[in-house]
Image (tube, rainbow, N blue to C red; front, side, top):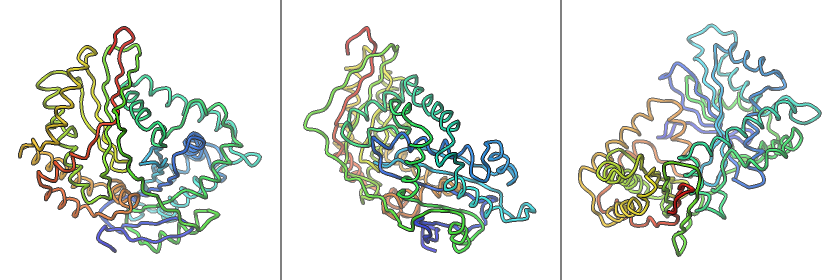
Length: 427
C-alpha cells in the first residue's frame, strides 16, 4: 500500500483502486468514466447513464432493477454527470452493507460489482439498440434538467459567463448536453455512441471497505464485459491566457436582481507546486464567509445579496459570482476589482490567512471521515496525474507564506465580465 492508502491494479482496461479497511460498515464502490467534452458527443453521452439505470439484460424492467437493489439489503445505486477540466465525467456509485453484518448467501461486494458491471456493460436492448421507451422518457428528463437552468438565474449567469469566456473551448459545454441535440436522439444512435463511450472512456473503479485488491481485481475482471484491454489516460489541460482585452457581456432578461459574474485565468492547476498557495489565495478572495469579497462587498458596502469566488484547478479558471441591485453595477464591479487588486498587492492580514488555513484544514480532515470523499480526493490526483496525499497537502497549506499567496494571486488575469440585467435598464 502506498501513502495514499489505496492499492492499485488494472484489469479489462480499468484502473482499479482499493483501500482495504474495516473503518466502515459498508463497501463504497465508485466508477469514474471520463471522455473529452465535445460538441457532437456531449448530449448522447449525458443521456447514457439515465438509460442504463432503467434496466439490464438480467433485469430488463425498471421495477426488477430496483428490486435487485432491495434484495442486496437496500444497496444504493446512483450516478452523476459533470465536467472536470475539459472532460465529461460520468460517475456511478454503489454502497452496500459489509457482509459481516448480514447473513447473505453470496458476498454483497461480489453482488454489487456484478450489478454495477451489468448496469454499465450489459444493458437491456431491443433490435440491437437501446429500448426506445426508456430513451424517450430519459430524453425528456434531461430536457427538463437543462431547461431548469434558465429558471435558476444564479446558475444560468455562471454558465453564461463560462460560455462567453470559453467560446472556442470544450469547457463551455454543459455536461448534460445541449437542448438542440435532444430531439435527434433515439435508441439506435445513442446505443452507437454508448459502444464508443464504453470502449474509449478512461475508467477508474474504486472500492473502500473490508476487502483486498486481489479480490476486487478478480470480480471486476469477471463482471465487466468490456471489449478492450486498452488503458486510456487523461490528458492534462494546458491553461489558457486571458485575452488582450477584457470581454464585456451584457444580457437582458425579466429579472429583479442583477447577476454580476467575472471569469479570470490562472496558469496554476492542481498539478502545480503552487496549488496550495492558489487555494489559500482563492479562500482569502472569496472562498469563505470571512473572505475579502464577502466582508467588503456584502457586509461593509451592502452591495451584494451573495458574492464569492470559485477556483477550478483542473482548468485554470477562477470565477466570481455576485447578486446585486442593477443600479449598483459600476460600484459593485469597482469594489470587487479593488479586493482583487488588494490581494495581488499583498494587502493580506494575518487573520485572513489563519482563518482561511483553518477552513481548508477542516475540509481536508473531514474528507478522511467519508469513504466517498476519500475516493474523490484520490481521483483528483489520478485525474491530474499528481499524487498528493492529504497529509502532504495539509502540510503545504500550513506552510504557505503571505508572499506565496500574493504571488499566486498576481497571476490571476481578468478575462470576462458578464452581467445579467433587466430588460428595462441599461447596464
